[in-house]
Image (tube, rainbow, N blue to C red; front, side, top):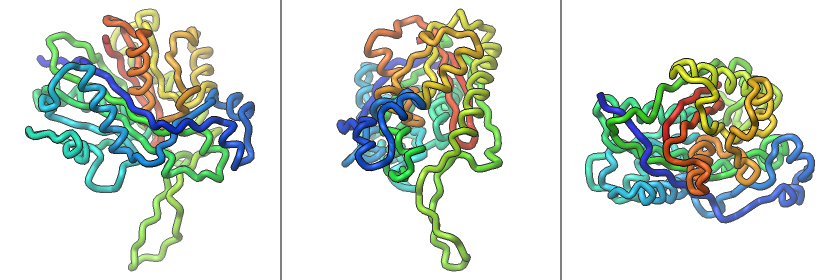
Length: 322
């Protein structure tokens, strides 16, 4: 049986750093208010680059880190809900940007902030069933283009970024079993409204802005993260003590802190970088993973638990041996 392993990681963030104080110049907020409620101090905003640009830069970095030729890649999966355009996909744009010559299967996957977890499960399956031998998996978002910059409850939370990994066929099982799930968003608490123009149907135009009921998302997130951690440990016959680091979706410090308290997990077991980047949705887990590897926080042989949640409402977790 084929197995898969991560052989390279990389990331890309825009140059523009927007602090909480910067936001206070045009909306009613302040650093103390944002920090106390989210743990976020700064975020990166793409001014000239789009999702495919950040995805490309993270892919190049991951391929370099992996030490392989780009033409070994036979599959590209991009997790995003802020693509450059509806079609072609960001993944197909990357085939062009990377100038790949060989046969490459390329597609986007939208599971919102859980996108990277879902994408990893798909990438693993493709390698294990022999469809792929080398997959480039990327989480990339330019959320600033779908923000309502007059809504202080949402625009303070998000940032732009991309993170990538290279997965290759392996004789040793290093990407373990995943737990992925979804729960119907009956009350429409999180999503992006899109205006569609249909001449033959009456409709009410809606701006393409991200919307969120923060209180409801908070309750869902705490439950979903806890459940995902418990289920994925059970599936792999492991205990939390077997895990070296938990890399969560970087959404809100209070969510992660609440989960840690409820489960009796030391908060230092969670690798966090949301203070610097905010919530970068599908990019947040691979961005944190890449940063943790680059800073040597994560070492070869470490067991990592990746866990996320997002609009849909999607959630899930996986365990990898790095």
